[in-house]
Amino acid sequence: MGETLNNLGKLRRMQQLATREGHFVLSAMDHRGSMRQMLRPNAPDQLSTEDMVDFKLELCRALAPESSGVLLDPEYGVPNAIVRNALPGDVGLLISLESTDYAGDKYNRTAQILPQWGPDNIAQLGASGAKLLVHYRPDLESVAEAQRKVVSSMVESCNKANIPLLLEAVTYRTEEEEANPELYYTRRPHLVAESARQLHSLGPDILKLEFPLSAEVPWDEDAGLQACKELDSAAGSPWVLLSQGVPYDIFEKQVRIACLAGASGFLGGRAIWQEAVKLESPEQRNGFLTTVARGRMKSLAGIVRHHARPWYEKVSIPQETFSPDWFRLS
View 1: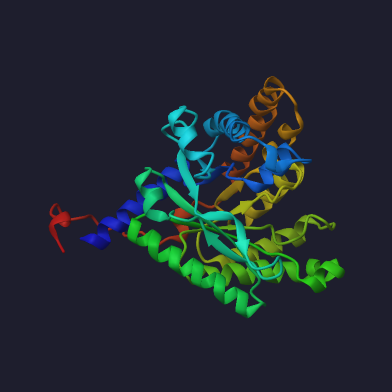
View 2 (view 1 turned 45 degrees about the vertical axis):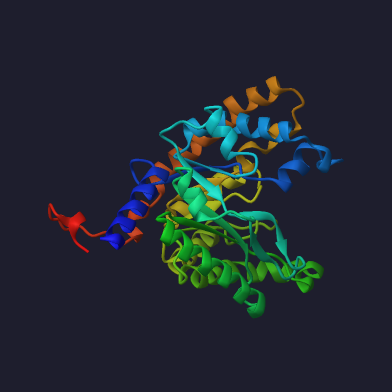
């Protein structure tokens, strides 16, 4: 019975994160270090906790009503959004596991879980899922192995806590590619697809993946669609597209192509709301977020509704009728 209860519980939480059609329309606002830098570029360490919390609450109030789920951090976002009623009860809640920092240097990055934090805590908060970010290079075996150990540990912990794990995989440039960016642009489609293939095998419930072609160089839609189809094949599980801070018009195009290729939606952050950080007054920010940013979410939701693949089509869900005494069986 325990396994059946776990499977049903995870299934129900996956449903909480999705629209009725089985698509993910997810808003990301779990940024910490990068948000400090955006809000106060010249002195990020001097940004007050109150200012961080206030901006996250503004984001949540503006975008959550247009989202099937919201991604928040435990430090500034989750408790304040709950107690200040910024997160509607019918919107799913994802909570991040990792620290904003990572172990190692920028060419050998290993994720760190926040101290005294884990899937059990996230489940106790009534959340719909946990999120883990890993910087991943499948061609750097030693650091990739270290990252896989972190992922495997969190997959196991999430399964025990009866909560889905959304795993975000982000590539990065090696020292050689920093000196010669063309190498990275050429390698990126394979790196993104191979990362998805390797990490899917560890058992996360949803993958959050990059658009395989770099936004820094020109590309056409046919090439983008082909690269996304290869990514979809490699992913093996439901996946959503991340925004990675690209301009909104580019992200909108990426979302449409990714969904045509098999993605189940998106989990977007800065591409949707990043202009708001440059507005000085709360009134200006609120005006932008409740008109422009909210309008962007509606447009993206429309694209997803017309083109995305429902997440459950990539998951094996038993269809037989349960016996009336199923919960008594061991």
